[in-house]
Image (tube, rainbow, N blue to C red; front, top):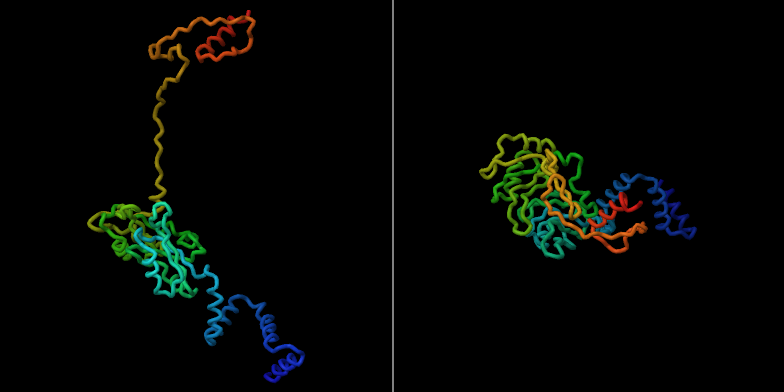
Length: 310
């Protein structure tokens, strides 16, 4: 079999073809019909055996920053670009990292971006997407996915909880530590005022499973920081409808009328105003050319209908 291969290579060279080009073309023909999983398996095997191939694969995969850039949300208002990068540099060399600030106020908007130098660093970071940064549990996903890559699974509404009645001195870390007894937490934080960075007395916790969220809701002992706290589904709190109260009775309201005419049922509400006599010609059938008040116009219409035309 080996002799056959050598003979084919020799024939190709004798025909003026290089062995490398012939081999590459042959490989393309062989690889083209293969499904992606098989190709990935073959390249992975080759990359693990030959460092030069591994480096080539790494270079091609990392060429596009879309595979290396992470979107990080849920940041504390006081988190800076430096502290953000410091939290992620354990996964690999960072090419660029920044917290996004409001252009007008210069204050953080609560999210940022991290771009690694190599794609595998980004993948390592995504293995544990939740990360405690400056006392808040931030969450990351590929930036190309945007918010669609966040926790938007169909059961999210059953996993995200609203926590109300919190003591002002309860931190995000204390909140998460209290609720992690029911299960693994994907995301959570105390809600802080953007300007003062003071707790607003409530927060949110998102569990990784619906079962853990149910345990937290059903727990009869809901006491944190010496206070009874409220634990319920976040959607039920957010979607709390504001009941519009309809009037039980119609309240009579006086409608404005032309000056000089009393309001019905309230003859003394407005004083009677007498108008000077209006002289109109019988043969004048059109509207008066000079402007007149509403009251004069009504008088003219009545005269026109009942006495003006003989």
